[in-house]
Length: 354
Figure 1 (cartoon, rainbow, N blue to C red):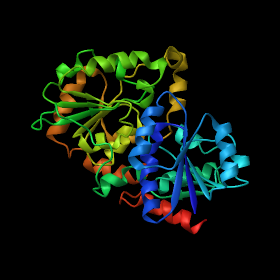
Figure 2 (figure 1 turned 180 degrees about the horizontal axis):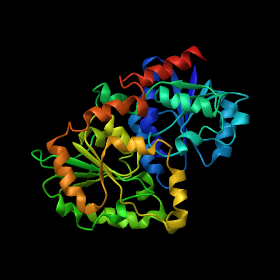
Figure 3 (figure 1 turned 60 degrees about the horizontal axis):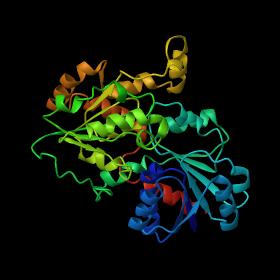
Figure 4 (figure 1 turned 90 degrees about the horizontal axis):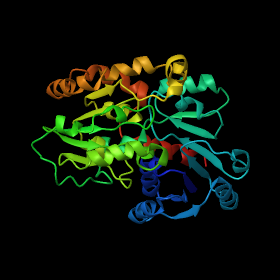
């Protein structure tokens, strides 16, 4: 069997790699298609670390030409692909989303039917089936967290030599939009001097020109001795989730992934919105969020403003079990089975449906 992972963005890899490793354990060959961009040297490091068989392409036009020639059994995608009609004449396609969360795009990305989409939990499976009754969806769980659930060595171990082992560690992982990042004070690490601080922004915040304000703030925060700022090469959120005692975030996938580990989460309700999402245009923000946004919100304690944050952090670290029952009750809805076997279920499906 021949498997290919279409990797248009570096941050798809944390979801792909557990499946790749499971394929290797079953003696199945796989390749990666990487798209050329300004971070090719970082991607090359990942290629070297895992000794990945791979090719480089410039765009989807080039990748479809390669796929037509290669005629693989299965090709994985983390998002849509505009040449599916051509692809399906030679190969089957599998969609494996790179995150979970409250954004409506989780469901709309299935509007272009792939051979199968692997999803997290019966609830999401049922919703997708009701929206796209003729398409194939399979509940496997959330394979990105398999390494943590299986207590494996976590890839991309962080070098936290400046951190004080006697202090608890908080992780701030904002999304790129809508984000709380620009509403944090320039000196906020001083306010949390009693803690180690991990900052893991969205890949776009540190890689795209339009978010240069984000990068300016992030670079300033990184100068504080109690802060570790993720570099572009720290593409995986998993090591950060593993190290932290508490997460601060906004409406990001990170928030829900951390909650699955049954550790305390603080959700920032204060967001920097573009003018086109305010006032009479606020419907655009609501449209961006999933219909279950309100229920998902119960998985965390909410900070209405930055000034509320310090007290909430102290409370949650003092009583980390206070929302444990709610987190556990929402886990199945958010991610399905959390037994560390999601990657195995994916590979078993591929083997049965060559």
